[in-house]
Figure (spheres, rainbow, N blue to C red):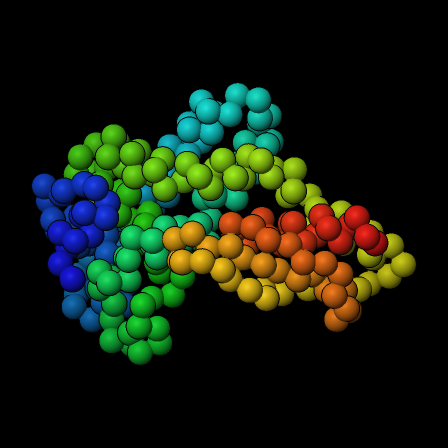
Length: 223
């Protein structure tokens, strides 16, 4: 695969191809080849991602309170969400990984893929300004933000369930992934919540967090 194939996925053509290459360079590869890794780009991309997502939520969801906006952003700007974006756009085909890292995980660990998304966002910003980075972020986070805004109250369901079950003492609460349905870019996750090994309820959602909250909500209703 060539970098131009990734550019098609990003819907952006870099003027400086080296920026894109650096954004995909993991520390393991950089160390082995005595070059700069994507860590500094990742740092910058994290800030751009937070700013653009915050502005999008502020402008498009005026009814949300400040605390709710924070919860929505935390739900979508996280390792799991960025990992899904990386998988959707086949970032693993373009990563520069060191020999040791390739042995450990050929496609790159979720954290590495998530970090590469932040680094690529920074590279797009440095190469073409805020607009292409903003376009990429909004296109990939629009649907997750919409979903999270509908389930913003569900951030509390796991806590409510835990408090309800522990009223008579400590218990072991587990959320177990039991099924994944659909392609990587459009998965539905199904989780089962258990208390001391006993099944309480199952829940589904387009992210693991939402599926867990759905399971907790259903468990609260029957406990």
